[in-house]
Image (cartoon, rainbow, N blue to C red; front, side):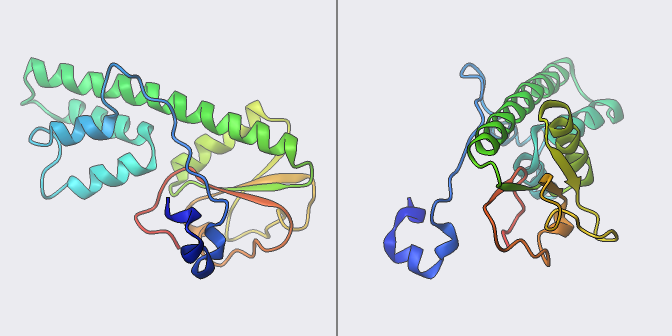
Amino acid sequence: NQREDTQIIQYFPGLKGAKIKQWEVNEITLPIDRQIIDKSNQLANEENYLEWLTLCMQSPSLVADKVRTIINNSTKQNEDNIKFLKNIIKDAQDEQKSKDELLDTILSEWLEGHKKGKIIIFCMTDNLVDHVYQQICKKHGVSVERYNPEEELKFNTDNNIRVLVCDYRGEDGLNLHGGEKLLIHYALPKSLS
């Protein structure tokens, strides 16, 4: 693990303490990213492979949305392909539920253990920001701010706001220094800035 390598840490001190968390996946089925790779002749090709990879890195729900669009817009799918596509939707929904449960657990544990700490969650797309924002508002008794670059950010000045949820626009230019903070990449961008 390179994050624990002392030579790497001296060049990238921000990686010290970084942890990777993986949501649980049904042991009987392949994760949806593997299913797409294994059936790449049916779903992913040279033109759209990067799009599928991006969706897999962002969220299972986005993969399910893409598959629904394929089913709804295609007249050439045979019965086996439709069954395969519907299984991907089901597996993506299961993975999304597991991912959301993992986020809930991380938030609960961290907020409880860090009474003055704050959390920033990067989500990439507006749809994911809305999803995560609503989930946190429903399940956690904390104030949440949804980042909007056209409005004044209250997260840094209001101690009652403990969670900030950002889309891709929040990755650059936000002053998040000082205090005790946890950064979460709910959706992985193609490159980390």
